[in-house]
Length: 311
Ligand SMILES: Nc1nc2c(c(=O)[nH]1)N[C@H]1C(S)=C(S)[C@@H](COP(=O)(O)O)O[C@H]1N2
Ligand SMILES: [Mo]
Image 1 (cartoon, rainbow, N blue to C red):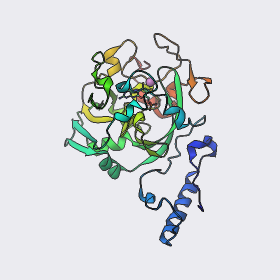
Image 2: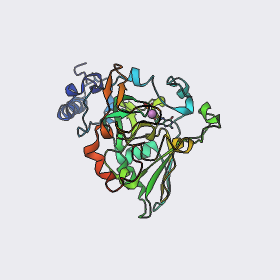
Image 3: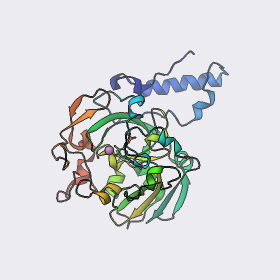
Image 4: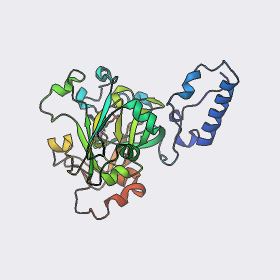
């Protein structure tokens, strides 16, 4: 091969491919294709959605966590309570998959993930992720801002919240037969949160479509909130004037609330949130307010100080 594209998530963030270099490589590759070059093993892949161009707005203060770590340490309770659910999650059937958009919208609709991607397009972003259990990772998601999906859905002015729901088919996930959980997995955000550019819908990670265990084929990513808000394998997006009750809130409201913004100074009832264990290294590092995303999101919570914003 004449050109080997280095993968950004394999190197520290400061060494990752800057956007202009990436674009130049694409231009070179396109030029070679036009010239009839045959050396390209991935010819048609030039038109494929992965890897997507990186949006450099969001930068990391730590190295990316390799897939061999993040793909073997997951929370996906539909497949059990252990972190080793990757092989069980292979039962998830992602084709066909459709997402129902309903509630307070101009017109309810059902779209395939391919339709959504074709209409909106994809970009890559490097985000930190902080689980409420006090572990953390940093990963390259591919997807688009949730605001673009909201625009596509065209909610009416009566809508105040977006409610997300995961599939609920025990044939695809044995955990769903466990009746002590109030399935399906549900999560929600306010319309203002949904309109913040940081709120992201992921269809990919590590430069390819989401492996099943990460919540294929389409999931939410809210990096300033505890990880349980980032609902996986979404089948339904509803616009509503009632605050959604998430599955964890329904199960244990004293520990898991609606807002769940990361705050090192507000402990979970059973453990401190002051620090987190970085999955890469096992290193214990201080947790940051809003997981370090305060400059982007703190304004969302002005005037809401009486709410239980932190758990
Ligand atoms: N449907 C569904 N979504 C979910 C969960 C889950 O169990 N089911 N776990 C949540 C939690 S607690 C975390 S930390 C993240 C984990 O995402 P990851 O496995 O891709 O790292 O997914 C969140 N989304
Ligand atoms: Mo989590």
